[in-house]
View: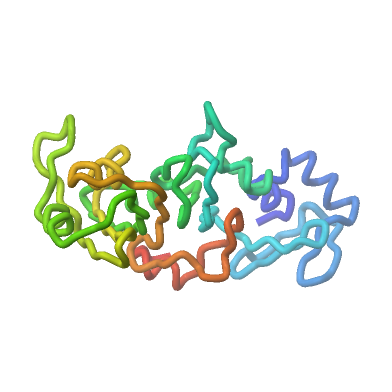
Length: 235
């Protein structure tokens, strides 16, 4: 693929703008400055550099973000800063969007992509991809509440009870809850249905993929082949 086309598809602007970047010696391949925008570059395993920053070639841009509180998972946020503002402009130019949504005050693992097929695979209720949450509760937890959550609770506007795929008490005020659906405010509503209240909420995992321990709030990284495997998706 021509180098100018690679830059364009990775969000660095129009082809004209990308040609100008290359000719101004801002782009390197394998550590060597390249000034030919029309050079054909093998894309398999390609890492190119723009202004000293490495970028892997990605047909689709998919990342994992450690979402901090105070950000909306919307491309058109209304009340708080949009979570996409935490990403480089090049990723935003690729029209990436969150896979599912976390509430403004919810933290933790958030997947973001421009891959519509992947978004559907992980969001579809039919696939029942488990999501694991750690909830801080206002009142002490007890075995009866866990039994209710596992058996199923009836939520407003839902035709049938909804059950958690997993529920365990971490300590008196901490609940680990596993869900396979994505209902509106589901964790908070389910906890409220058993007579308690969520004070803080953090997503720990999607599928078998855990939030990377070295990823600080607000930080992101590209998904790896191992990550895709843990999500049950082949790439």
